[in-house]
Amino acid sequence: MVESISPPAQRGFADGAGFPRTRLRRTRNQAFSRALVRETGLEAGHLVCPAFVVEGNHLRIPIPSLPGIERLSIDELLREATVWFDSGIRAVALFPYIEPELKTLDGREAWNPDGLIPRAVQALKHRLPDLGVIADVALDPYHPAGQDGIVDDQGRVLNDETVDALVRQSLCLAECGTDIVAPSDMMDGRIGVIREALERAGKTEVQILAYAAKYASCFYGPFREAIGSARALGQADKKTYQLDPANREEALREVALDIAEGADYVMVKPALPYLDIIREIRDRFAFPTLAYQVSGEYAWLMAAIEKGWIPERPAVLESLICIRRAGAHAILTYFAPRVAAWLEQDHRGA
Image (tube, rainbow, N blue to C red; front, side, top):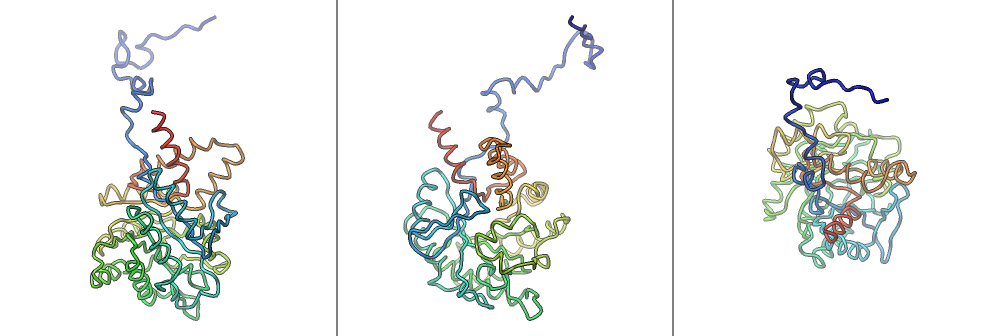
């Protein structure tokens, strides 16, 4: 027996004779109309692909905590980057795996013009001149303690001495053809000093991506394994220079300073746990804002995908759309190659 249905007036409508004048479900009813009113888009050009580079030839070294991600020798990087570029990805971010014997207390390998990253940059710009190359600026891959800066005898990371080293690293990267230097160290004042040094060196077109709101997050573990700093860091942490996850206003102050000092973009890292920070930066500053879907975010999604608990493609795409909806102009993500391939397939199918 079918239960009786209350008349419209008793169901909260404006009058007893009609139904709601506005039905938001109408435009959700068909695929074409959902597309017409979709507020946020995702294209391959919104994605930046992080890449881990290692010395050698014909090397592809799997990273256990990042399923499907490998350290690549330069020749393999060129092969992969060509595929990425052909699928619509227009920028890569390079991170080195440095052999322990090259790690020193002053991190000098970071500004070796014949070092791993300068050679990788030169090779990429020669093979793919229109590919944007972003190079990390920090000392953690080059320092035996795994910290982002120079450390004193008490284990404290020294701000001003580190900034001097970061300037040398930035100038080296600019000289070898890097399009964007990306200080990820969170030292005070480094953006202004790097910008001034680049200007004085005539590198006026080199861009700066400031990791302005980089939190002291637990989600960086797989990345530290990938660059070989996890064991060196041990039980130490980076809380004296990275942001407290509980703080919002402090992040906005950091962003304001980096913009004033000459950054071209600001970065929020991690992404999904900090969507509120991304949104507030866009609303308050109307400034180019990137987000890094970090290694731990990738790992947690991949773990659930491999268990069969969530579907791969919908989960990955939803996570990236959410970051874009929050306000990110572009996203660094380890999912970039597969997402670009999916989008390319969809475009061909259309």
